[in-house]
Image (cartoon, rainbow, N blue to C red; front, side, top):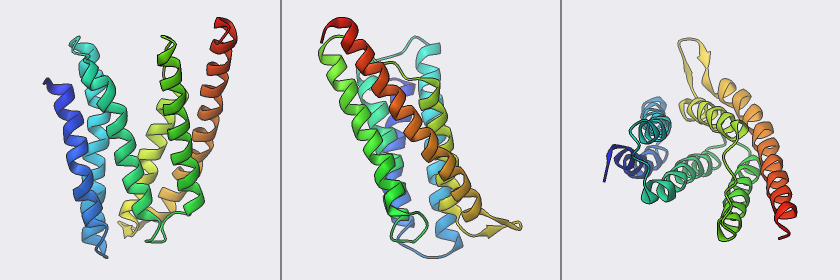
Length: 181
């Protein structure tokens, strides 16, 4: 157990508490859900950076980090559907892309090859995180309508999500064609 893995476990542990806050209506529970999501999203940026910087990359971290990310994003988006803050079809597209890419990576790993994360995937994550924070906040604070801000970033995230998904599939098929698989 090292610091990056502890941050990943923190992200997993925070997710159910964020979900619980989303069962309650009002600005305060919305604020606390957004605060928990934000702190977890920050750990996503930190754990990989720290692991590479300290040469502390572990097999456990490689497995748990993407799982923790998907758990956090999926839980937040699914909980926003019944609250009427996000269209269900958008959530389906985003989650479907995540499942498909996870499957591609698994197939590639069985062949001993790796489909590395692209900058598109990193941008997707940043835009998704900003969108979800805005949609979790939802209400107006300091004359800023956070729902509108969240929806703007969600549309951008959706475009990048689809684009990066296509990019992963293209990389996968190029690798498969190059190895004769």
